[in-house]
Image (cartoon, rainbow, N blue to C red; front, side, top):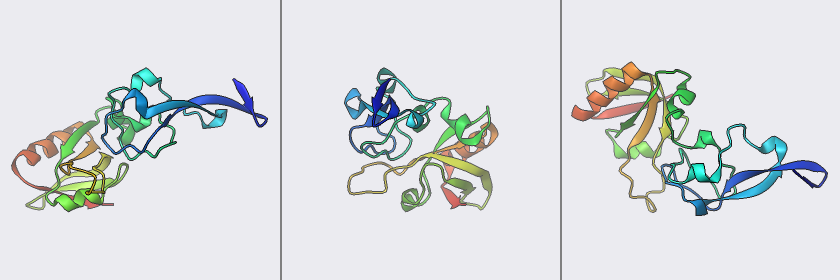
Amino acid sequence: MTQQQGQPSSTALVATRDLRPGESLTINDVRSTPVPEHLVPTDSVAPDDLVGRHVTGLVHAGEIIARHRLLDSRLPSALIGRPDARLVPVRPADDTLATFVRAGDLVDLLSEDDRVLARGAVVAVSPDSDRRASTDTGTVLVAMGEDDAHIVAAAGLREPITFVLH
């Protein structure tokens, strides 16, 4: 530990450039930098653990990156607080809808015949709203309980799904 302006310091991983939601990380996307100890996330990760992982939301250059900003098998449970949580890729009936949702948003999912498929699902990853820089399909990853996840996934195979934002 080093001293910097009288405050204890530790290190954290920060983004070296702006990262878009869903982007796969390389070792060049992060650097270790000294930060005050109270800013080091409790769920910090090692640089080698980041390579190939995907960020769940927009990360700005210089922002600290921790495990909760990465897609992994623990993310759905962390988002909704249930051990049976699952992530479901949902392509909204209207492609422009994907530009309005952000990671962390609560949504209800409805079928085209007005059936409620899931309530209070949490957006885990949404495409970048800057369509000039994105060729993404508009698919949104949404976290929900296992039963709802199966219903939503099956419905998405045969009909459009729309989001109701909370």
